[in-house]
Image (cartoon, rainbow, N blue to C red; front, side, top):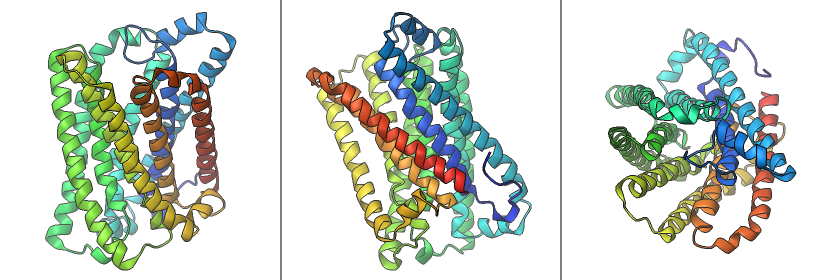
Length: 386
């Protein structure tokens, strides 16, 4: 790995964003397989459905499937490799004085990158299992209860960490609101949202009513907590931003609302599919179309807000060229988030109400792939230079 070893006091939990970015990009490539290949009998593509499709696919279709499959798995492996590296470095970091300083400062919210990255790891691991384990689709129903239990443990861990952070800050003081001129605290609702989307999978895909209800209840619980905490932290940060401005490095957090909106939007979509498939609740296609449009509108607001500052202070240029910092990996997540939302908009929002749009689907897919390649290249440059 190009990252340094034995960073000790120079380590920061923000390095976990590198692992998070790789996992997010893996999911974005996997969506091509989900939306563009048939998977009869199972809600998502698996090794078996892709093998069956490969046997009847033409040359061009195989050229599309093979890179999507291999790139997804490569990025999942990179995600876990970086997660292992972060685990090793974090253990050494906790034995330094710098860790105590971190815990007592505003930057203590960086620690919420742990439940966030671990939740992404569980989602990415599930994707990898679907792609490489023959027959996984036939036993997926038995996996769901264990997945729910694992996400619940992770959710308790995330809530415990957030309670510890807030408890210390609100009882002992020391939180400097005037220095909270960034959206770094949004790491916390991001983690809760990632856990919520993890619960939404079994809620939408399971065939067992008890499993569906438990997963849906937990999904809604963490969904609501993510939304409420987002509002609190966003309003708190915006006051300081307008009063103090943002410094160059922390301005890279200003678009974090994009991936948060993405995971919450996917969770909401899966809950809608649960109601439709298992409880006979009719979901009008136009409703989904407008929902994804509204979701992208929220994301565009964060993108315009962040880009207006990042272009003015030249941090975007530095992050993409020779001056990335650990926080620069926060710029990967908005790119992934918008690409994923756009894929859902096209395939689950637009095409169901405008089938004629399928005529331009190859062009749209090609543009999405080009954007993904550019994102991977930018990510690789950041990783190489740290």
